[in-house]
Amino acid sequence: MAVNVDARGLSCPQPVILTRKALQEAAGGGEVVVLIDSMTQVYNCTRAAEKLGWQATYDEQGEVFTLTLRK
Amino acid sequence: MKRVSGFFASRAGIIIVGLVLGGLAATLQRLGNPPNMGICVACFTRDIAGALGLHRTAAVQYLRPEIPALCLGAFVAALAFREFRPRTGSAPIVRFVLGVFAMLGALIFLGCPWRALLRLAGGDWNAVLGLIGLAVGIGVGVQFLKAGFSLGRTYPTRTLAGLAMPAVMVALLVLAIYYPSFAPKPATEAAGQAAASAPAPAALFLSKEGPGSKHAPVLYSIGAGLAIGFLAQRTRFCTVGGIRDVILMRDFHLLSGVVAFAAAALAMNLIWGKFHPGFANQPIAHTTHWLNFAGMALAGLAFTLAGGCPGRQVFLSGEGDGDAAVFVLGMLAGAAVAHNFLTVGNTVNAAYAVVIGLVVVAAIGMLGREKLPVAR
Image (cartoon, rainbow over all chains, first blue to last red; front, top):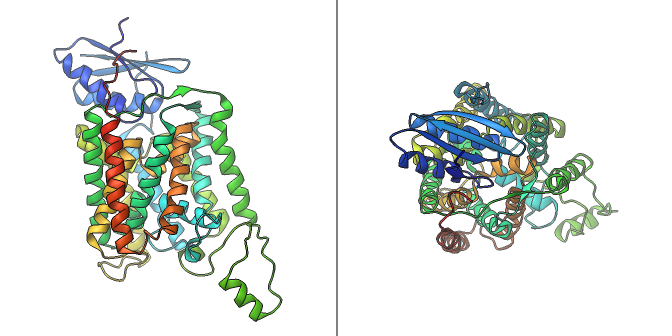
């Protein structure tokens, strides 16, 4: 699985900024994978992605959340 | 694969929690906290700095139990929902400096963003200048962030490091409840007056008059603080984040909670006859419009670069975020600087503080722009 954005350990709103950038670059659609490390960022990045018309799901493994965005 | 769900993540959740928080803040005013200051992270941290003797402005010295309770409420919520994550390492000293200048700016306005909303809800139109300044500061901060500003990553750390700030807050709470004073009791009235003019070092200072002397009963303050901390941790309630997300991506989720907070406080004020509209003669406020604006612009910029409003920094410190804890300590130090250097209540000194603060924080914003590796 290719990771497009590694936003682990970054403060608000940097994960959102990086996620939006990645989604705008993949404007046509596809799959974008984002690594983050808190539920706060899961919520924030999900809202940012849904705003741009993407669907978000996440998986939690230990300290890391993998957010998968699809359009 | 899970989808984001649950009450606290929903629009209804943040609005209802915003209403509860605003209602609790107005209730604390009713119970004795200073007017339009049911909860103010800046003012209360300043009062704690005074209680600890870090500044000697006699009118603002009280160990406000709300601040430790806010942190511990968030701590409990984080533990209960497995979100307590000890982490640190993202430029703590820069965060300390941002905390200092955020505090200088907020105290020039006389309030944190929460109090700006409570002042607005009480009819204090000076708050409008502060809120416009706050939005401008956040807008500039967003531009730095878009240009690549970052304080770097935090990394998971020892549980010990995450527990440090909640432990400090427990100690403060114990002090707030027992309020020890080692000052000798004056034998005569004359000796009492002499002691009042040259106060002996005491364990804790306590205002006899002024805002510091006004407070709700300690247990109510603690109860409200714990509830607010718990709910804010669950919803990630953040005033700066509310404005920032609108500027950044036209997202009104957090802002809807912020508006609900102000609306609930306004409703309670109307019911209790505490809504007094106007610019002049507002409680714990001044009418120097440009300083209300510029002070909050400085604070808004510093909060944005640090990642959230002062309340949010307190909650994050309860979740184990050591860097947010350092920001909070920076605010405590900033309160001491503000009162010892008389940047509060002195227009000339305040003007110097705003200019120096804007230069320093803008320099941090410029120097912190790095091309972040998108994947590490």
